[in-house]
Amino acid sequence: MINISKERLLNLKNSFNGLKIAIVGDMMLDCYFRGEVRRISPEAPVPVLEVENEFYRFGGAANVALNILKLGGIPFPIGVIGNDNDGRIFLSLAEDSKMNLSGLIIDQERPTTAKTRVIAHNQHVVRIDKESKRYLSNLVEDKLVKYMEDNISNLDGIILQDYNKGVLTPTLIERMTLLASKNKKLITVDPKFNNFFLYKNVSVIKPNRKEAEDVLGIKLKNDNDISIAGNMILEKTNASYVVLTLSEDGIAIFEKDKPINRMPTKAQIVGDVSGAGDTVISTLTMALAAKANIIEASYLANYAGGIVCEEIGIIPIQQDKLFDIIRKDKD
Image: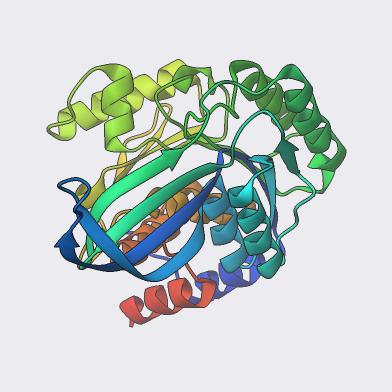
């Protein structure tokens, strides 16, 4: 049982405000077309969606940046978008959010990563992905590193948010982690399968169950499997901490030569897990930057992930909502 006093919660909440967090990774645009299907197309045996609503939201690393913003921090998204209509929509969303755009590069050689979801009667009909998974050019990579070098002294933390869309190349991973180490900066990682074990000597690596299973080639069926997996990742990455998210089974926290800490999920009703991982890494990083210890930070992140799982769609966590719910649960 984690016992954080209300005074400590208030102190942490206040400490969130103004924290400067860089988010390096795959910036995405989520596009939604909602409507109804009343007929089949005469051109082919497919449903015809009569669009009633069309809207756009941040996805991927951009959603992490939005979570940082809503938690009271100042996000610095570092990545690329394309010179296309999706890129212009992305820039418009960022400007509406008053998000700092100085770390974004418009890459003429690739499209903006966009996921378009077609939804009829509250059910997904199809998803259309527009993306390039090839690695960044050396020129673009050098620009991202130069931006980090110029700004790292002002940062309170760095998140490497990897969706395997080509931004976090092996050399960029190495250069960013070395920069963080040299400048003694907090650096957390939300990894994917490719390059998983290149994230060495970071502050925290936060895989989910599927990512751990895929990269280790084992199924996490019970507590013993979870223990083996977390400790293997800890050993292979030499991270200070591994925070393994386990959906309905909560989270497990691993630290060298320390017992495993487990926390049950805080989601009462799971409506949609989309974006929950983004919220967890955002809250975890903000809390650590606010000088919470790993248990306190994981406690807050676990709550935040549970809250957004109860929502439909990709919704960022709000600072007031997070701390109000935790405080009420303690009453």
